[in-house]
Length: 413
Image 1 (spheres, rainbow, N blue to C red):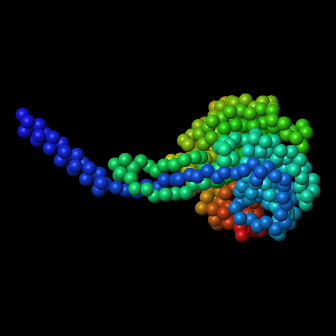
Image 2 (tube, rainbow, N blue to C red):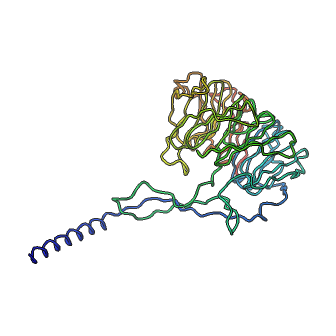
Image 3 (cartoon, rainbow, N blue to C red):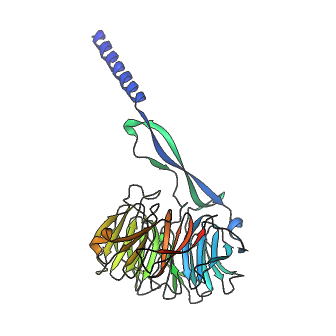
């Protein structure tokens, strides 16, 4: 009996050793993303404005167009003011230094801009000498305060690690939430006030109210006194909200989990109406009449998402339905003029489509413009668009969308 037990134990030991050897031989590598928090101190961002005359464009973010001005965000650093009175020869006018800035909205003589967690109101009646007239502290949620300071964002670094190939998974994030790329992805609509925001914006305007998003809240500010916005309402949405498109009596909010629609007939108190849900993806929204156009893309925040353009029927606003999805490369911002769609498709550049037929958009691509990695676009009119990307700012004459003509280009230095 003793010998029998010994044989069983020996056999078990041999089996364990054999399995162990197999596992040691079965190794592979996967890519993971390591995150590290970027800490800023209150005294470093709650400061007065600085105006710089000759700051070059290095890391462009969101854009805003108003009359003869183009505003371009320099990611986390401030806003370039560009004199576009002659589109063939745009000129950098100055740079407004705003630590932590990503979004902005211009209304009349006041520029509203975020500075990490704060909302700034800047008097720009004299663009040569903008004045900070109001700061609302801690109105936006980022990643929280610690004993060391404010967690402003997370930097991500890829790392290849060795793992057991029998349990390798699909890659992973190690740590926090990615805000290294402009989030938000509001848009150019007829209800934007005196200017047009790009489709990646988180700030929008309607009926005397400024709407602003952080990752979990829709914030409503009253502008009865434009120099002092008043927070009237904040609406919780945990779906990873990114963009806002005010259109008529509705707010269309793009989120990681879908497109959310709010009834805005009472502008101080938007109410949730319905949602069109999709797989986890980053998605700006553009609305034209009874159609919503949504670009979905993968990326750091949107693992596993498809890259596509969704066309959604919103004729019954309470029941949005998908008409058709079109595959894309890595779509970002979009804009529409008449029946022409201008779409930034990542490294594929700017694509131009005829959208008069919902079911044949892929067969009606009019042209593709090599702009490098295109990020956002604003159709100022059917004949004039501005595009931003990792190479700079383009302006095109699109009177013939099959052959857009370059008007001007401001390059990144």
